[in-house]
Length: 487
Image (cartoon, rainbow, N blue to C red; front, side, top):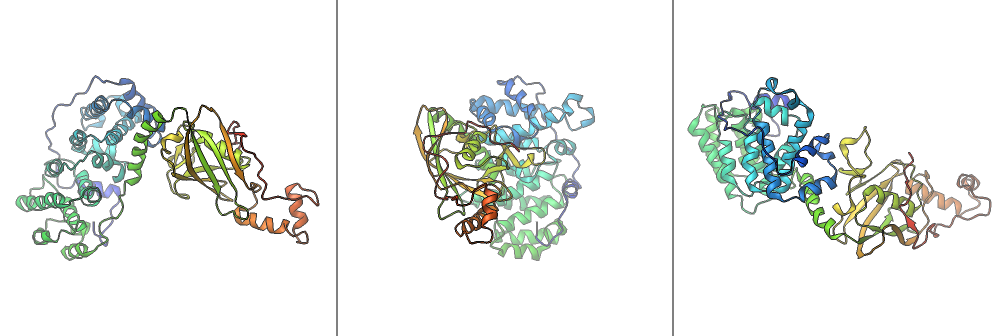
């Protein structure tokens, strides 16, 4: 889509994407009542409100099943949904439940996580269903979610995508998504873009050959095809694109006019440098690598260095040893106890400060942003020495802790314990690292006007010292055995 063209709302885009293309796809017979290899797994997918909130250990357990049988089950589930047809009003009552909707969408994501190329035609078959069907199952999901499994099962099957794009009488919205995927996501994962150009060039010729036969595409899809050519800087197709515009086959309000396409061809920043769905890739990649990590982590301990950021003179850090299979919630308890925090504030883990996804104990207000720390194992994220995360405690004072996995050891220890400690933990609610620096300055100068007030606030008597160098915990002390959250 051209940057200066009109931006459509999702509903406007859906209406535009199906304009002028009556549904006439002749569907094969789908099996409405398959026999599953793992009916308990298919049933289990009913239990979760949204695929992001399926606990990571459950994802690991499902993906640890033999992929051949699991793939067949997930594909069979999609076919059983397609067997319902597009008239939602005629569906059996139980099939209208949110659980079935979520079960089907979760199955698509698991197929993406498996990444078998044989699943690509099944996913595209799902996108060939009626408008109401697609809107029910996929209407609330973004491009990133619906396209992710297609990218993961792609494996350079260009002809399969081209055949889908040329299919007549189907819902057009996902053709637009596939065109965008083909020109923005695929160039980031393949070495040779010549096959992409071949597909798009064939599409341009197909459009010109069929002209106003709108059963194959509409003007929005034609415009998206031209934009896709601009995304990959396929200037050799400009004569074909010009003919398309001269014949008024493209929606100019959607992609701009021909001159805009020419300008976009020259824009070196036109193609994204980073995939829009990278986080989702990482999400499922971590889930798969966790299978091996958990198998390898029996009787192993992770030794982490937990360093309090922005606190120096002296620095404050702890080395702690924890079983590799504990949850992030248990790990948080160990960190809080080792550092010396009292656990009276919210906390989360993430890769970068305040950038999702967050690992925390979710609540009703922010469930959409959090991966449940009660259900997520350390070994599902940490698999190699040197890996880092950020742990933030108290979102007011913002105590950021850098966590680095320094060593993986064989150990029959069941609990968490301190290996080494340096520096005193700052007092709670002192104003963060900068407030703590001020506190140390005041306590270092008995003549400071705030000195007595600061002693009283800390519960110290006159003449007592606040020794910032003295850690409040010693090597060998157990941690993580207390429930630290009391908010």
